[in-house]
Length: 431
Picture 1 (cartoon, rainbow, N blue to C red):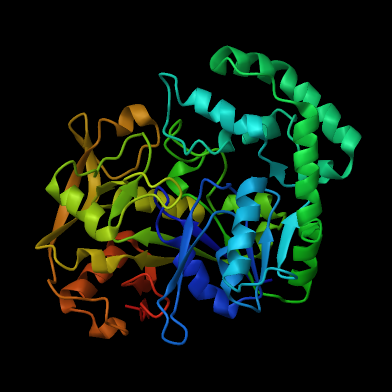
Picture 2 (picture 1 turned 120 degrees about the vertical axis):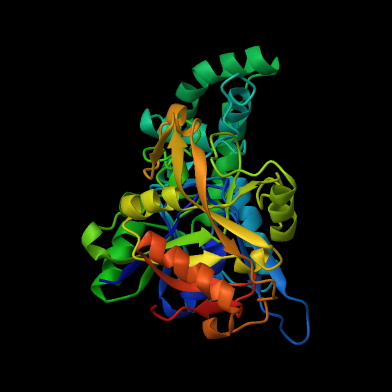
C-alpha cells in the first residue's frame, strides 16, 4: 500500500509546496494531515501561452490541486478555518483550477471559530509569547484536546452546534470582555455564519478515513503532505516554541487515519541553509550582513504573514535528529541557487555546550540556547545554477556540497531544487 510522506525537516518553510506539486504528477491522492491556515505552501505554475508564471499560496488545500487527475484530501488532523478555505477555493476557481469532485474534507476535522483568533491574539500579548501567526490554530487544538472542540460534522445539527457554542462561550465571553472591552459574541450570529459555510462545503465533506482505506485497497498512490516542520512538532520540537500539532511523519497516520504499515517512503524537505520564523533558539542564526543577504536573495519572508525569516547556515545536527525522528529515507534539498554567489558556505556539524563538544541536537530550549555551533566550511561555486537541468551539469563545488551533506547525514539526497519552478528540480543519482 504505497503511501509516501513529505515532511519538513527543519523549522518549516523548506519548500514543501513545490516538492509536493512536483511529485503530485505521479500520484492519485494528495492528503494534508495536520496544521491549519498558519501554513503557506507556495506553488508556481509554468507559463501558458506566453503568459507569466502564476504563483499560488495555499494554506489548507493540498499542493497537488494543480494536477487535474489528483484528488486532494483535507484530513481529520487539520484545523479548518472557513474563511481561509472559501477564499482559497474562490481564488482557485477564478484562476481556472477546478476543485469540484477533486477536494474532500474530513467530517471529523475541527473548526477554527471566531473566538479562537481573538484568544490567540490575547496569548501573544503576554510575556510568554512564542511568535504564532495569530490564526487561532493553538486555541482550536486546545479545544480539541479538552474535548470541547467543534467539528465539521457538528454543523449538520443546529441544536448540537448551539449547545456546544453556548458552553464554549460562557468562559470565553468573560475573558474577551475583560481583554477587549468588547460586546459578547453572539451565538445565533455564529451559528448562521457557520451553517452558511456548511452549505458551501457540503459537497466536499465525507468520511476521508474510509475513502483513503478504500483507495489503498485499490493500490492507489497517496502522497501525505505535512505543514510546518519537524523541529516545530509539539512533542519532538523545541518546546514551547512549537506549533500545536505533529508535523513529523507519525502525524500522518493519526491525521489521516492510515496505519503505519501503509507507509513505504518518507521524504524530508530541507533548505540548503536554515530559516526560522517566530521566537525560540536557533543556533546557526546569522545576525549580520550574511544573514541579511540570505534573507534578501532567498526571499525569506513568510508566505502567510509576510514576516522576515531568521536566517542561518545549514544545521546538520538538527537534521540528523529530524531524520531519526521521522525515519527519513531520502532528502529533497531546496534553494541551492540562493548560495550561488557566496565565497564561503558553512554547515554546522555539532555544538559546544558548556565547554563540551556534542553532536546530539538537544530539544530542551534551556540547553539549546547555550549551544555554540561548530562549522565545516566549503568554498562557494560562484556560478549561476538556476538554468541547470541535470545534476551532473551543476558546478563541481555545488555537487561537492550536496554530496558532503549526503555523506555527513548518511542519508541519500534524492532531488535538488535550483529555483521555484517545476522544471528547476534536478534528480540526484545515487552517489
